[in-house]
Image: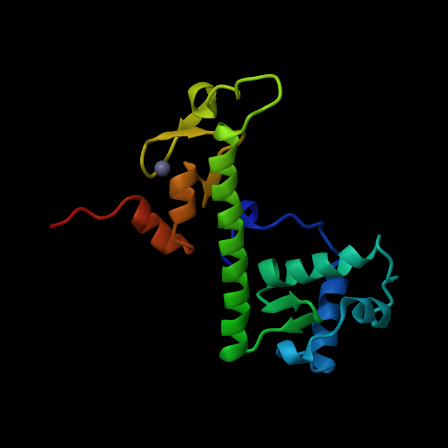
Length: 185
Ligand SMILES: [Zn+2]
């Protein structure tokens, strides 16, 4: 159904398939279509008879993720709860909220990269540059550059460096073509 490889999905617990089906049916029957009709997670947990405690509340969230990442249900959460995203402006708003979160995360990433090497650590010099002693885990399938860090990122099974991983096209056909572009005639 979906082309999102398992190692690109966010972490979530495996959830009961029945709970996923119940959640989707519930949202459809209760008319939670579009952000303005979102239903609070606590109410969903109560109506579906999942105990609404801090321990079990994540079950609903995990079911939501499984529906989106494995079952192609365009479900999304907002501050008012969960809803099924409609095409059109609802979809555009949902994408825009994701985009602004990515922007905020990128800002945090850049600020951290900038601050760490310059920071005055107690006890003296900052540690040596991580690039100097990082383990090389292999070669990138796209650019042949070294892959460093604590794990090898893969997209459709191919090992990629961080930069290429960020730029890899989402679908397998586009990815394969991007990986080995056909020679120009
Ligand atoms: Zn690369």
